[in-house]
Length: 334
Image (cartoon, rainbow, N blue to C red; front, side, top):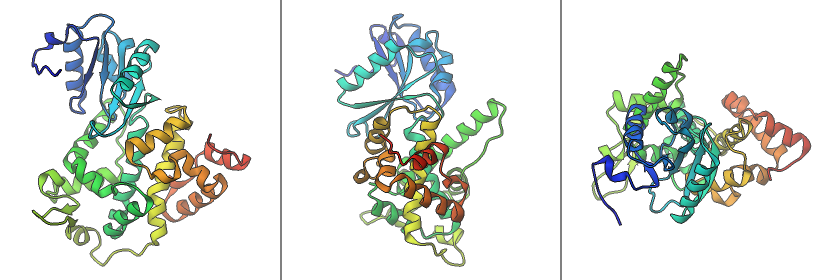
């Protein structure tokens, strides 16, 4: 059923097209225009981007009502989730067709509204950034990865970056910076970008596919943490931090980001958030997802622990208003 081609005109009979090009606006725009030139007027064009705003990508389209996001997860043949993203001009008809296609492909669709990083990418990005922040602080990377495993995550934040490749993470970070500059805003780097920029540009550690990143990958042997991390980030020895704090920083960073996404209207369904976090980004499944995690703790207890983390590690752990309101009313996320 697969027909390889390098000719856009071979798409002319397709009623639904999904692009999966690099995270580059210029390339995306070129592919959009090339495909739309031959597609029928009612054909749907979907982008598999994991972070670029759909509304902005749709500016290259002559039919923004038929432009939508369909974010599949890697490896696509195994991961059950598809995140459907509606741009400001996406029609209900396009959403219905994308949803139906997701089900026909055997996926579990969740629907979110447009914003940089959408829902899943910004939530997983929060825990990866927290892991990077802890490396920069001089915390033992073995403890960071072990804490993720103790939490129930399938991989730790450093393994995730190595698998994605630090080179790719660096390029995506550069694209995000360029986007901010294009909008007349000053780019704000996070710990992930600061860390991968140094790893890639100064230490030549680009990830697993390039021979090594945070880990060394000896042929026929077990991967081990790269000793250079200690040499560059913990010259006087690793910083002593309670293991429980490391575990909670990785989880709370994701949950708080998910609450912010709900406050901002990026996601409206608690069920979609819980399902998306487990099926798409490997959030610890035994607590039921990002929002159910708060119920698991109890909103008041969760807020109290978040405030503790905020005092020790920074304002990013301060509970959002929606979360504090739930705690005051003793309400659950349902």
